[in-house]
Length: 281
Image (cartoon, rainbow, N blue to C red):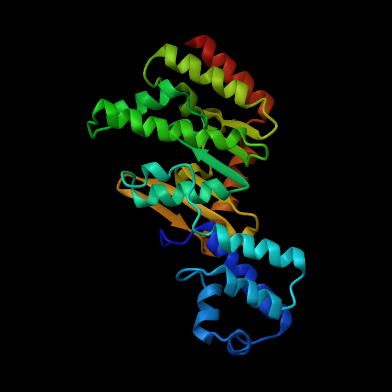
């Protein structure tokens, strides 16, 4: 996936294609009606290049879109270039993280499977700091602080008036691995227990006793868009990150996640296990 392709841009393209198809127009016909080329209309539908909202507005009128539809599409076109809270960090964060933050900012749900660490959206500050300090790439204290601060800011999306639903399946090793210290882990486990009581968060533990399972894929995140066609799979690798949006890729990871949460403990049993592990620490 191109780092220039954001969820807003993808959604705009899908909506423009849908409106034109409903009207039964060709690209050439639509362009001729508003005085632009066939290539321009195609570009707006295929997520390429810049967007001018007056052209979007004109096309919507020719397509016979309702006032509500036109307002929604034009509003989306105006927001395509909108930069989120991470704007001040863009000069110093990798392009793949910029894309992740953009997609995550617009997601309506996030499905996480974690085999090693607590997902970033559920980490405490001390836990997150300990992870950065343990990196094989030695980082300066100010760099660690910056990375942790970005992670803490990411978590603010869970306290929005309409937050995305976060569904996390954690391998048992995640809650047993002592990151930082026992005190830090106790605080982190307490945080997970509080999170599991939120109506917007579902947390499950996949116990060792369940044996072999679909986790052979490794950790991954499915970022859910407003429509299934806008879903994206995110996988963090040692040498970078991978974003997948092909239907065959999405289907594979959706099936894996369904399999994992079916094998994992339910939320009540998961909280009980977290409490037991906390007492052991």
